[in-house]
Length: 274
Ligand code: F6R
Image (cartoon, rainbow, N blue to C red):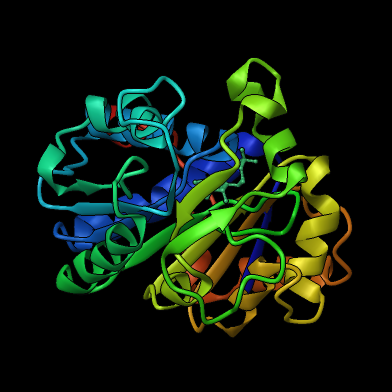
């Protein structure tokens, strides 16, 4: 695991988008794992800008989202399908047929979960998985005591997750669907590369547990410590409770692979320089 601490949300999102940009240019048929939520909004805004201003090409890539609420049809204003359309898919040249989210209104949910796993396998697995972290320590909707070997399945959401997501539902946690389909922790760990992004002081405590605490199903994000290629990208506020900040900063400033990312360029800056 590598921990990268940047001054603010803008920089954390821009680095994340620049990593996607680099991977997509190197491998246009990349299989991307997508997350939703507030943290990712800025990442997707940067990717849209990179598409519009720098010609970042999504036409050969495929995407698989982590999760979807059970009971919300794709066109529901609060479905994750709708979120993805509004934040990213409608603004880039991605083939709609190559974007995948679990179907939250499938009549046979167990079959839907198995098919979703099969689709990921058929695509050759996920190359780059984007992740946020919930207040409960979840990745995807893998709430506490989710098996660390779990696969895509139905999951009940904790009260804290429903509170966290209430903003999208008029501030009323009771309106947040109580269940979701989510990729399992085991599914996520099979991605070739994982990037977890967290910003803001509300995430500081859970980020410290996930990064420096024991690997435990009580904080499913801690399972990322087992992943051979995982970066945790934080702003200063989210990093506030980490013990090893000085060491993580040293690595970021000295490892060769990060040299090109030391001075991040906003979308469009590359071409403006020419
Ligand atoms: C969403 C998802 C969740 C969120 C997490 C953080 O698809 O899988 O794990 O990434 O709850 O959400 P925000 O960014 O809203 O704090």
